[in-house]
Image (cartoon, rainbow, N blue to C red; front, side, top):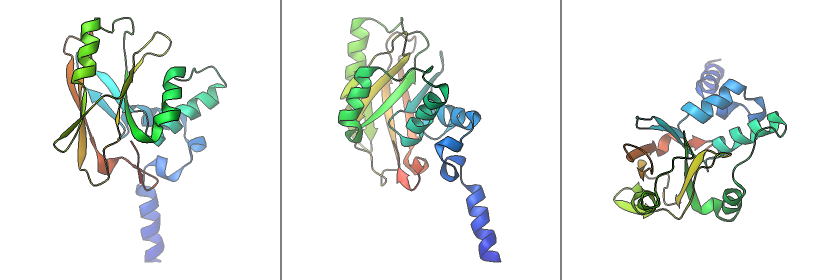
Length: 188
């Protein structure tokens, strides 16, 4: 009896994304994955922005499930970005940021500064952007691709950002690798 109780308590202590399939997730649970899960972080304030690891399986599954349920009413990501992911998905980590005003994406000089100053920091090493996709009116998400240099042995990683068109463009977002496990695998 005690072994069954321990197993039950372990099962109940796991997050819903570990115990249910995406088809079983409620809309509230899908929203939770997309807004408050370990794969999502707030990026400063003024304005507060939501950043998420777009290449993480639970994020992709939540978005795919929303599109399936909307029966085509919800648009997918930019086709150029989708092609990039098909070709490079296993080699990159994509940080995506919901952009409040896609028409305000800074000057050309600011966008170049974003390309130069935005880096993935793992330990003492820094890695620059290997691709980016600006926000658009129909897809108001900035996507920054970095080389997949993070391993489960790394305690955490930080992405230092320069966000064009923002009053306070320099922001950092940190993720803890131990929190990014999904179905027994590190997901970024």
